[in-house]
Image 1 (cartoon, rainbow, N blue to C red):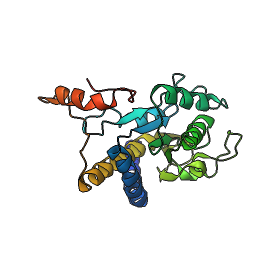
Image 2 (image 1 turned 45 degrees about the vertical axis):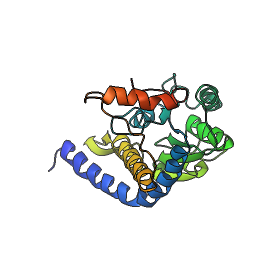
Image 3 (image 1 turned 30 degrees about the vertical axis):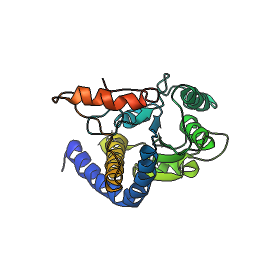
Image 4 (image 1 turned 90 degrees about the vertical axis):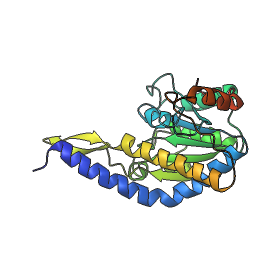
Length: 242
């Protein structure tokens, strides 16, 4: 009988492969939208409440990733994510400081898709003329009752949806007498975002645009190159290199 760790690895890697397959078309489509926005001088934004913020942070200021990526961060660490109106205030405060511009894209991340803050961030972004990509478990977002008074979950309000294939409760391995462990939302979510970033870079390259890619600061010349590249986005990014 396989150990819980072995079961997790086998199941999660199979889910990861399937997630890449079912999201491939959406990733290609969204890469073109993001690529055009970046080519026009725009910034890609991310928002994830609570643990989902980790997924968004994966592509912010990341060596080998895109420079113009900025995060809408929740100082409450998700504790108020179901206080109606809180996400709206977060998004509008961010808009006042960093800017959410027409034609840009925001990736909103929520595994359950039911919490108020991610939905509100998505709705504010749409009001401001941005495209919303929702990263969620479609199975959960389609069945969990939303706490947002609008009555819709994240997948329903998003312009495009990336499905992390997560199960209810996120964990996939029974560790002891019905107790489940081994979450997959971070593993699959961060992979989908890295695939999206790479497809965006491919779109930029194939359409003759500059590649605004972050270099490793641990390599010769990396810090200097990042500082120069970041100057054009200095008023827009929540985290800068150098």
